[in-house]
Every structure is written in structure tokens, then in C-alpha cells.
Length: 190
Image (cartoon, rainbow, N blue to C red):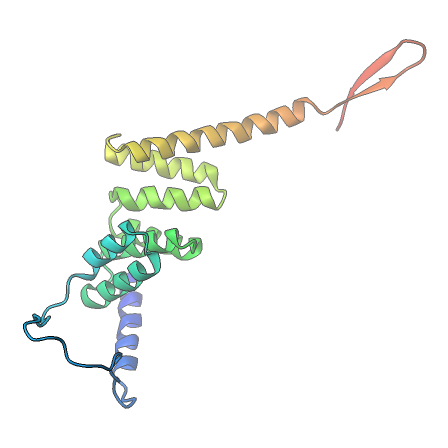
């Protein structure tokens, strides 16, 4: 059902792209390249370009490369996960979550999507769900990746800290009331 919807969206985009608008204009004007410059006849895979741009910290450009990969390859598992990761790095957490959940629907054992979804959930303050997601990523990865172990530890620590703070807040909610000469009564607040 979801893949049919995605296919319909891509088909509509393709139809819109085929409308005649006067054609494309060259992006750059100038002299031709020097003699001996090799002509590019085949483009590099958008995923490879996007991964290199992500490593270089160029997240917006990486996102564009991933969109190109989506246009060429379709919304594969790798493309969905890459789009989610780029959106995560750009702080677009809602879009990242949607894309990463779609990647997990494609393959429930794809560890990078689980890990990145956990990061999104931590960033949005959903610590308990993030802990569950990191635990899933850790189990699927058999604990082999240090980054996933660290993320799981952090989620556990934050969830226990918030539970501890809630209990401490309730425990320390007392008032000391004076009752006559040298007598005090300790009351807990309702």
C-alpha cells in the first residue's frame, strides 16, 4: 500500500517534469573546456556522492545527491536511510523520523536506520522509545558497533536519571511546620 502511494507520487512528479516549459537553460556561460579534458558520459552514483558529502559535512549538498539517487534508483532502503540521515544532520527531525521509519518498514533488520531513528527520538525527548530502538539496533548488530553501544548507554542513563529525578522530586516535597514551643511537624505535600 505504501509503495503504491510512493509510486504514485513519483509518477506525478515525472509527469510534472515532462511538461514543456521552454527547456532548460545552461547554468554556466563561458569558454569551452580546455583541449584534452575528458568528457563525462556517465554520472557517479548519487548515493556515493551523498555519502562523501556527508563525510565532508556538506549535508545540504548530500541531501540533493540523495534526491538524485532517489530519482535514478527509486526509494530503496539505502536511499530512504540516507535521506533520513541527511535530514537528521540538518535538524529536520520530523522528516528524518518519517524517512527512517519508512526504511525500517522496508527492512526491519537494517541497523543504521534503527540507530538513526533512536538519535531522532533522543533529540525529540522521547527517551523511553529511543532506549527501545537503540536496544533493537544493538541486538541486530550483535553489539559490534561502538557508536550503537554508546547511544544505548546514553539512553539508559537518561531514562534512569529522569526516573530518579521524578522519584527524588516526590520524596523531597515536605514542609516543616512549627507547632508550639520547640515542636515541629513534618508534612508531605499532596
